[in-house]
Image (tube, rainbow, N blue to C red):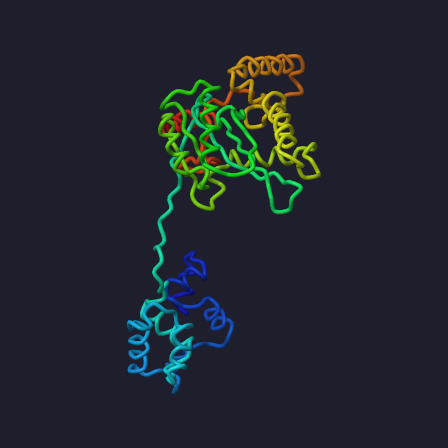
Length: 350
């Protein structure tokens, strides 16, 4: 207690001082608030149950659990089999406890060991048709349990939907057909585009991978069950499905679903002012028209500020063009300086 009190007097916190000498903070508080302490009041009793397993019994449990007969079975399967043989060695919990002490608690069947998963490589886009993101979403049908499948490919830099289709099934053949159509319509050449997606079978099927290799498109994949690795496509589907004109009833047939998606894509590409690209439409940014639009907006704000300077106490709204878009950056995007670091980081990610 004298050591603790000296440490606290010199500026240390009670809980940190207690940690340094391996003493519970609650114990120190109890001793401090009680009468004068002459000795350590912690119990030094080493309790050993009378009915604890002996070393011979522990060795027997390990021998049985690692035998040819039971080596592939968990204790929940071993104990009943021993009972069928008229043998009782120990309870199921005792088997688990002994195996845990021997560091043998693991899958005892022939299973594939866990594979290390790493974050996808950081990607950056500084112009259209450099980085695509795509995914598949469900569209409800009138038949319960059946769906139409919306294939949608997004240009990450411009946020334009460069290709879409609605099919009755998911397959890598249909995916490869869509990608071919996009490359033809956008004039994509080999080694120009990186295509990012999740790990679904339509994305990683043999036909799809062969098509990407033939077209010279680099493939990038999310980690299994990590939707944050493909944020642009996930955000796109939420934007589309939360539109006020989203049908309240299921789609009756494929033409009806395609008609709705076609109207929605036209609105998204040509009318929707996207918040992440300074509120210009994806089509305008894809064509490079956003530079002039943003410059005009800046001039309008500067003229308004000059006309009424007393109303402007700080900086005017930032209409500077976003020249770099990042996907799965290696550092927290919140720590990136939007005025300086993106261009440097884009070069690094590229």
